[in-house]
Image (cartoon, rainbow over all chains, first blue to last red; front, side, top):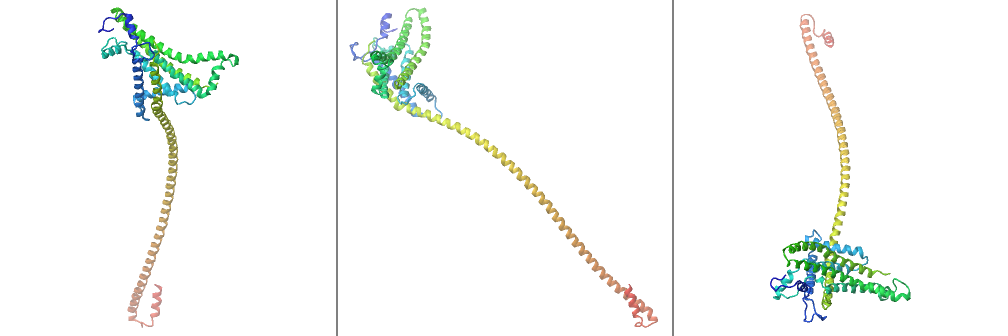
Length: 270
Length: 156
């Protein structure tokens, strides 16, 4: 809770934590940007790429250092996951999976930072204690949807590239019932299946992280109540944090794995 | 919770990141990993080969050792033979030398004896002659009895 400003009600506190730092004065307009989401997602992405690139540049084939070992472990983990699921030849999928896994993990991991630290810091820097600041980019529907959208575009791109436009259309219309009369039904089913992929990807990640963040906020609220509840809050926060480490990693892994699976499905010719 | 332009920016960033990762991050790391895997595999293969080489070398060494031992035995044997031969030769030579020396000695002794015998004979004959002369001086003519004296000298 802010010690500097006037006391907030719990509703206001939660509301404050769940509002993005948006550009523009009209929050309902499409042309607003969530500056905090973009800042953290791009910042973390650049950090990830810079770190891996610097390791890659210095990579020795001899005895690797600890950082190189760690990076190579991740790369090999992703590479083996891709090789287990995807049997074609594609230069994009493995780096894509690595980017998704590490980037999503890093963005998710921002959830581990105590909920008030970075917002308070931002308020201090901005000199405005009403400054909105959300630090978990994956708790922003825009971020998760953009990731899913990227994957969706690739799914369609590879479907058409591998099977051709006609093959892709046939896949959408002649399955599961290979009868001409059933084409509308088939199309409906397949179209929903297709659309469900990015939506489920985006919503799963968003839902998990949003819920995680909300629970951290609720636990943080307990510290303002009284000593007994505040003490309970410490235990709860620790428990949730430890559990959340699992969730964060698992969600990053699931996002990566499903991306691989969807793309390998796009490569399959029926 | 509304969808807005953040989506566009984020999608753009995502694509850029993936492309960057594909171009500049993945290949060097993968190369390093694969290179190392190759080196490890090579190293293991080399170790195997070295172990096999060692085994071969051991066999060769034991073979050579056996050969060397056999050769040494042969050499010793032939040396022994040669020794016996040399000893025999030396013995034979020494025997011959001894026989020669003995024969020479015997011949010298014989010659000496003959010479001494001759000398003795002459002295005896001279002595006998002198004796007979003394005897005959008293009685008979030296010339008439010289054949008897010659007969005596021959009998000595």
